[in-house]
Each structure stands twice: as structure tokens, then as C-alpha cells.
Length: 384
Image (tube, rainbow, N blue to C red; front, side):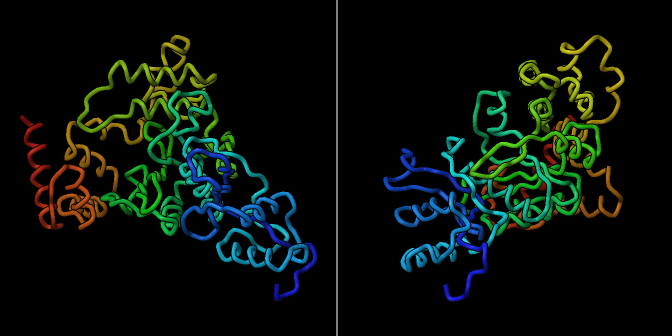
């Protein structure tokens, strides 16, 4: 170390996520610690002396550089260049314990840790919903979801989405960009194995976005993923959100089926207090059919008023009617801009729409014409 180290300072192990993968069948022999550096990039696997030094710092940090050999300090300096150690008295990304993976996919687990760290660094409150937390809370049997879902401070959704882009994601083409009509921003991975959905609200609640998020955040509970405490909804709250997700309308799909309703009731049956929580969260208008068998007769009447967010327009038989209903909630200048965007969308939206519909469009212009023709045909077919 060229510069003198202040008293109380020393080497500290830091990471945005870390897992003990020694002996894991999912990794090559010799793999020891899976870490996510504090600088944007991919996860790294530490082996040999580097892993041993990094592990040792967990119990001894801050460890004075003078207590290491020149060769060891050289290795630690290299780890510092990678964003895995630093010389300080303390650090917000300090790793204080190292545990084996909680989830069957260590990389998926590190995405939770990463998003929580990035949100914390930006000072943005967030709660992770659905996914493996439902299984860990005893609310479902299936462990994984295909992506990572989180609900953040609604006013800061775009800020958090932008902060995650350098870490290996791109924002998916979004015709609703610049408005609050859509409930989520989707980030697609460049090098990670899962998408991230950043929510500004949860469809089906009758409360405004800020009030609903505050209620969910109020009694959120921690789970530890990748050495980082992440917040998830309390079990009763999570049961309500999972039930809403199960019964959410899908454009063109028709009314919910008995099997869907049974799935929602199963979530309620596994979480004590979920009926009361549904009333507090404004979920009764969307879930009254599923809640009534579990509640006292007439007890839901006072909570049945209100309009579930993102519900009515999703019940429409085609996208033309659905989108028209959705944009009626905004001012005329915004409405006019959105109508133009849907009729003749930007390049990325047009190409994404063509891919989603299975059309081999090779240019944005051709993709726009295909999209426009498809919309007209859907609308005309529904009119007949």
C-alpha cells in the first residue's frame, strides 16, 4: 500500500451479492465463492488463494494491510480493482456472512441481491413480489418464476429502471413510455438469465399507487438472498397480491374460469389474515367472488366500491378496444400522442410487436404496416 492507512481502516470484503458454492454440483471443481462486484458487470467465481483471502476478511475486517504479506496485498489490490474489496473502516456493501444458495439457481438469487443493492444505493424503497418468496412463505409449491418482480416507489420507477441498465439489462420497447398507464417497466437481459419487471403498482387494487405501495411497504418482511436482505410482502399481503395476479384479466381471454378462482382461494387459505388484508388494500372489488366464501356474510359490502386499477381495459375482447379504453384516462394532448404512437409506432415498438405476433418483418416500416393491418382485422372481426 503506497499511502498510509488511517487508524481503524483496513481491507473489507464488499460485493453486491455473494454465495458459498464450494462443493456445489452446479459448479466446476475448485469453485469456491460466487460474487457480484460492486461495479457493473457479471458475477465472478473466486477460487484458490483469492477466495481464501476474501473469505478470511469476512470475519476479520477491517484487516490492516500490514498484517498481510506483499503477495497477499497484491492479490487484494487486484480484488480491489474488481470492486470486491476496499480499504475503509466500513462500507455499505460489506459482506458480513457467507451462506450457500437459498434458491436452486444461484445466478437468479444474485439478481435479487443486485436489484436490492442498486435500489438501496439510489435510496429507492422497493419490495420484491411473487417468485420464490411465495414458496419460502408457504404460499405455493413451485419455487421459481421466469423473472424477478419488484414494486418500487411509484414516483421513481424510471430512475430505478435506468440505474439497472448498466448492469446488463435493456428496457423493453414500451408504447406507454412517458405515461403512468402501464403498471410496469420490463428490463430484458443482455447477459443475465432473467427479465426484471419494475412495478409502479399492482393491477387489481382500487387504491392510488402511492397509498397502495405505502401499505405493502409498511409491514414488508426480510428474506436473505445472496448475502443481502431483501424485502418481500408480509404473507397475508403476498397472498392477496398473488391472488390478484392469478385472476388478472388478459385481453381477449374472456371471463375468469373456476380453476383460476380456485387458485386464488388457495393463496388465501395459506395465509392467516388475508381477507382483512384484502379489504385494507382495496382488493375486494376485484376479488369479491373469491373472498366471499371466506368472509362473514355481508362483511365485504362496505369494501366493494371502487374500481380496480388496470382491470376494465384488460377485460376487452381485442387490443384496439383495450388500448382505447386505457388512454381515455389521460389528457387529450397525451391521448393524441399515444394514438399516433399505436397507429405508427417507433421502430423498436414496431419490430417487437411483429416478433411477438410471429411475423417475419425485416424493417420497421413493414412491421408498422403488419401491425396496423392486424389491428384493423381484429377490430373488424370483433364487430361482427
